[in-house]
Image (cartoon, rainbow, N blue to C red; front, top):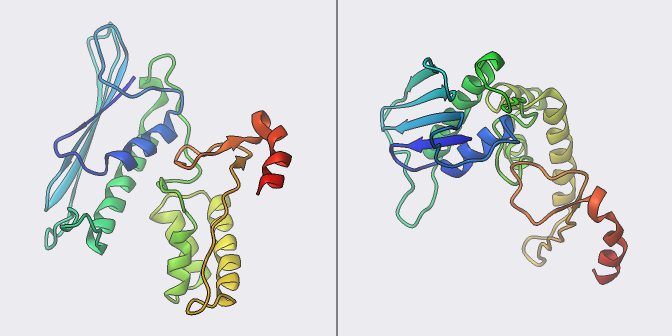
Length: 224
């Protein structure tokens, strides 16, 4: 069981998805007596944020605890603007929180976890959105070199080398296609192909593993 506790509920979707990437077999909820519970406490303030990880194993008197605090400028508010619009400082704040959680879960020793808690390292790092390619695309369009974008994916987003290269490669291919688009007189049409080799943990699209639903692909293409 994993229990997330927020002093102020924000970034809960992203932080839950990131935690699930490390522990894909665990369920989320409120821990009860008789359960092994990994509790993660989040505190968000204008000048700092803190995360505390506590492993409470049933029947053991001692619990494992790890806490980190990061100071931020506080010159701007990380909360959404009125109208729920996001702004650059909020994105910065969120990325810093996710980076800290990733590093803390990465450092969590396997030996402090009870049976059933199998830890893995997400190859997509802190990326929990539905369009990871958007990040390198924006950086490339802003004039950054491929190597600079690669370092950003590796260091800030903790993305594996394989996924970082994949992201950049797809971003370059998309950029070439977009050059041919007539944005003033044309339009963009998105067609979803809902059959995937696997279902990514962060994905919120309706998608179906090919292993189970591949027999429907032909009918889907005919209907499309």
